[in-house]
Image 1: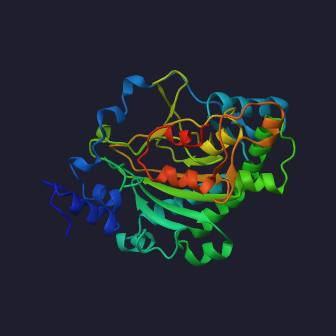
Image 2 (image 1 turned 90 degrees about the horizontal axis):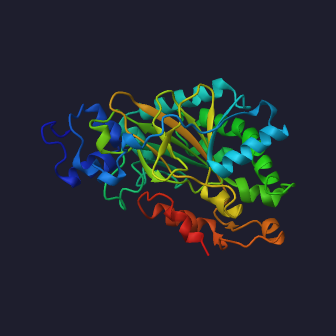
Image 3 (image 1 turned 135 degrees about the vertical axis):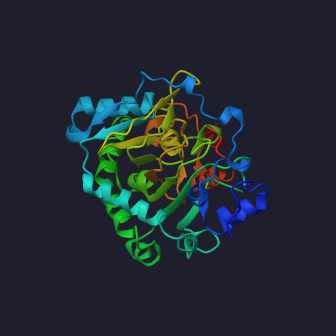
Length: 359
């Protein structure tokens, strides 16, 4: 039985049971029409989004990929990765209908009954590579985040066919496949910017040897100003390719200290950001940047990021080409799976994960 609206979830174990164990997620809370945010989601003041810190005039670069090999375009990609860590791309190789299909598939998955979605939760999923969950790391967080997600780690077409939810499987696979062209173009340009002119098989698998796609659902939230959709963090990927819907709510940390820049939705665009792995591989030349998502009081929002990563067994550190040319390494060699475990072991905490690899 769902708790009453008068005093919803004053007891933390009742909330955990409803949201996590029974698979209702925050969508279940939102669907109940709660008038007040449960206290478990109230973020400390310093983690809430202060609207006076938003830089309305600033925006991250928007890059037209139709002439991606043009030296000017290549320079704008490398500059954006160095200065901003974030940029949007338009006129890229991923067809608009592929993007629309994966957005519809995301709504289909989150529209399933809780008991269906719960078949993919940590306790019930047939594989660690398929995970339905809520918040970020609930066991490590003092305050929860207002988000549900389905995380799909790609191993093979066969595994995806056998284990991924049928309501979204084909659309996610198509989105990943069609995005690969753009991913390779971006990596080629970014490597050239570091004077790494040839991406052989070894280098390619270091840069993009594994991929994970998340379907993120941010339902309507009571008192959205008291919580977050996603807390401040940088990604642990090489690159992240993000499809967002038309609602908006993604903010990127600006170059001026505590200021935040909204990433406005542009129909048909993809948002690209540098992850920690690329910051480490580039010896700090390309920057992974803190970002966050605000909660929304009037609209449901979805986003679909593809995390392009090294393989778990890869050792990441500054690329040998950079060190050979006389650069002093600022990062040590670390096992990528250790780096990722360190990230998921704690609550979101800005850019602190990268300290794990600093010399």
